[in-house]
Length: 212
Image 1 (tube, rainbow, N blue to C red):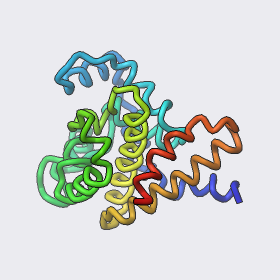
Image 2: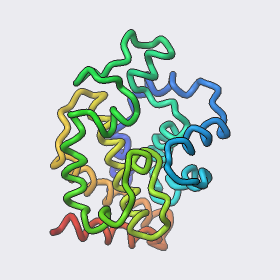
Image 3: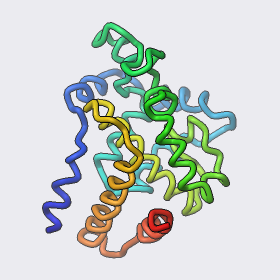
């Protein structure tokens, strides 16, 4: 029933032991905004980045996860080395420096996933500027296709994070099954709490690709 479905949204939970440590620095929104602006090649409104997770999902788990990324206290090895929790800044898989970009995008372990992602959603992503900053912080275009892809990317990042920290082999087939499951969960949340199906367009856009 729906109570079981909602309870199971934590089945891909945060590895809380590490995440609880990394939120205790003194980064301000102003400092975060300056760092974010430097990542983009054009002038951006950072307030859009802060509000984007709330526009694309009702999942508080995903909203909190993206909040950590935006504010720069995400537990990569490079970050944990800086705050003296780990004794190396190198990636556990390939030995490169484990930055946020490396953890989610550039590591050989994640490269295949993004290749498959771009192939599946090519009709949409080919029309968007999708570089590392957009993947990490969000696509700032406001049309429905961009918002729908932002949601999928957010789910993908959390999927990568959870699997890597639990040392489970990454698989695009497993991601697709997880994405379908997230659609079911959000539909149920919307039906119970919102009742106006305001996110219906998002599911329709993504489901069109999953049924091809």
